[in-house]
Length: 398
Image 1 (cartoon, rainbow, N blue to C red):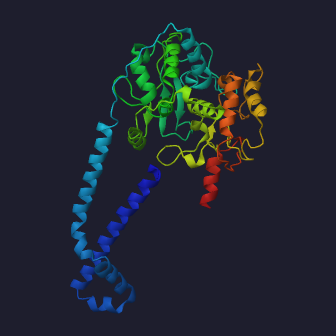
Image 2 (cartoon, rainbow, N blue to C red; image 1 turned 90 degrees about the vertical axis):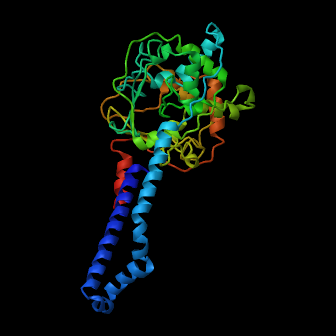
């Protein structure tokens, strides 16, 4: 239940309590004025009298209303305070040793940062007037705005991604501090970050891949740039964010026995869930609707794009063969595929400009994994001029 639903319910409950008290007082006044007989001869008033004085035994339990309310408020306050100040439990810094001169790690890190985990896609200024919002050349890792409720995104607040070049905050961190951030969402100062940064996914990554990412991030061109604003997350979601487990459970690449295993691992690193799996009331992913798509994103050039259904249903990629899937990505390597978008024309948030250079073998592994998903029928209209989400909400209200 989201906060915008919970608040009206709470207010309605308070209203009912007030009504109960007023009616009970009214009945008491009537009886003191010797209107008791009149009450007994009026069916409606007799029913009301029975509800309050017999069924609910209002006179008995109303005495405990204040005490009960006080206890509930105290328990709620203690619970919120515990979550706010005691959670999450900050894990100790890991003991790691990274060889920054290892060319294999550097190559792997570049591939992951730019084309799989696409760290630079979220942590860089992007050309919002071009198809798929590519990263502005020369600004890789400089940070920038990413998600905002103000801009129409279904996001609990406003997010500004930090500068991840050596000139940014993490340039002063040790490798162990950066490793802990990636795997637990805990910053060097012990504060938490919102899970818009997929630390839960990185917590399952092979440690060697995380080391590779760290090696490459250290080589980015230093850019002195600060976020345009401060990340602000709605209070309720700040609390639920603190309840997320922070224990890394790495999956080692040696454990990946086949293409499906490898595809699942790559999908996790690429955080495909973020755009293709709807979320539940507490901002966690709804696994029963995994990869069914349909999530709406407003476009700065106008209109709204909806993420694709990736399940093997006919409304998703059910009729796609492996080559069709792979070629969809490779087609964006054409220099004309990333073009300037005119106002109101179809656009996309899918980072084709980054994923287009994913290795063909990895794309085939991802396809193999997606074919194993339970098919979910969810036809998606990719682009609409009007918000489909708001239009649907209006229709449901009628």
